[in-house]
Image (cartoon, rainbow, N blue to C red; front, side, top):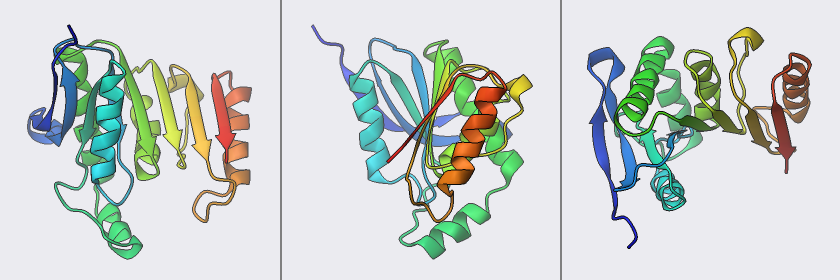
Length: 185
């Protein structure tokens, strides 16, 4: 018998470490995955992505970084993302990680897209995760604070993250001894 599957918007954490997000899970709790959406917000595609990961056996939470707001164009997305308080966002993401590891499964991975990738990298340096995947976004890394492998997926032509910058980033990680692989398309 296949375990029953569930998905819903939830509230996690407390006060400064709390927020809302889309949770996809089943009766059988699998390794936890925190998915960080890109700068248009928690679009339906991220709910579908979380559900697909859940069907593969993971317990998934996609925090809503914009508290229900969705951007319909790049200018709106930039305005909303520029309004995020970085430290407050990091606290919220740490609360999401704690929700997953304390209530669902101790193993945790992080997947970030664009803005979410930019946020995933500093998050992973604040708390241990087993693996990180980033799509078209990077940020600074302190090799002494990094744990677990990193997999990156990038466009060969990207107006915001040029491929040479990405290549240099991954070369630096490899030089520092971090298990990092990058693919460009």
